[in-house]
Length: 303
Image (cartoon, rainbow, N blue to C red; front, side, top):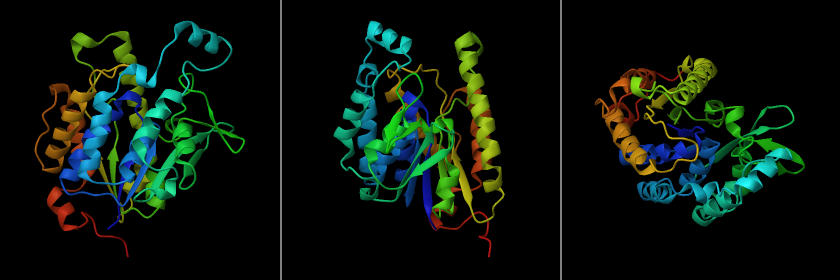
């Protein structure tokens, strides 16, 4: 049985995936393949080097120590001048120095297990899947969020954030031979509580709804395939802004606990208004932990 972990985009909420990875690996679920887009590409590349509980805890350490200035070193006047000239708010230099220091390898094919990184071709908006070559180029292409970071050039072609073409890249995992796909999506699954329904919170949740609908439509054909299991790890609720890393430690702990609870069949300890999202995640999972540990698919593979 080939297991794949698929890591979505999510900017600073990538810390949630670090906690999910710990929960999965502590439950004895190990990937044979990892696919990532946007910040999920950086996390995927990190865990693909050595998909063990220890490595996942190391990723948590990295996220717990992150501050906004480590990724988004802000110089207001310089940023305004850059945007006015049609550029981006930040350069990816600080972000890449951080990734390079922690990653430990230079080429995608040097990862411990197969790795796929998704980016968006600037010229036509199509999805591009990198499965070999420079891991630096692939990650910088996949994380080139418009206005935040500039498009990244590879061999004369410009690339943008992978989440623009595929926020949760299920298809590359299945095309690579995965029969069970664990989805580590950090999206915005939960409506804000009544006392936090500011215009910004409503906008963020609305974007989350659009992304969820797109993911559901995109994965409908895969859910219909009897030979492929898709296990949606329930996301956690958060209202952290793009440059807010102060909640990373809490998000990691909640994501780990919630993942362990989900895989164990218990109700995850989350806020009340998250329950519908958790129940949907449980229903979409189609599998239980005993079946996973036994290597028995919830549905028979097609002959």
